[in-house]
Length: 274
Image (cartoon, rainbow, N blue to C red; front, top):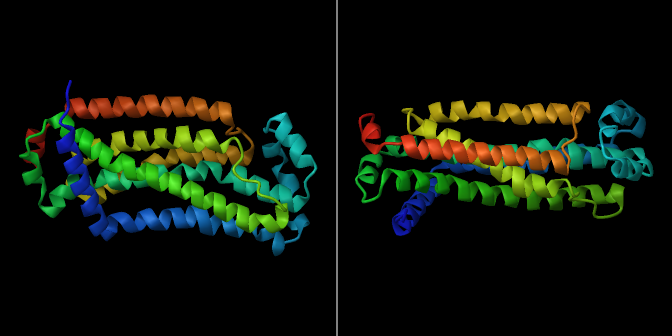
């Protein structure tokens, strides 16, 4: 099947221009990474400067450390209590939290896809463009996916710089990223963004307001919260193997949701709800 990529690129360009002009859309995309990738990690990493190692209660995290591979455990045995705290928080505690960035950014943009056009009064003109329903749906998906991945990778770079700078006085070296983070950023993160998009863009074509679509997207964070609880409690370890498996599941689910959305999307049905 040959798609009209020129029209798809035109729609993507128009939508990204509208995103830049809509503060309700892009401000959360700035605030969220700032909180999760700067403020929270810096506060946690700098705790050893203000709290004694005994009060950090590293021993209470023994169940979490026990889940780590042998080579990681052996490496941490030679560290001070403060260094263990920095590695545990920056490298492992915040790993699941990173997934919230691609999830929420893609859901914000996805929620604005069709329902945003409705609220701006521009949807009717878009629906009459010489492009198929599938091409229009794919254009909306790419409009959200591309910025979500760029923001996600940018947040990772920012997090890397912030963590190494704030933790250098304790660690005495550049210690981040660890090997476990590469599949998290390059494989599982994009997969989560795809799942979020497949769900939200489909919802956006059915509901009548941006807030309705955005409120529904909040449920997508629950699996990430479960991963974080499991990681902190020591029930599981988000290592390379598990991350690759979860990423494969996310990619398959996301592609399936987008396929369903592309097959069921109808601009004629959408026009009846303008």
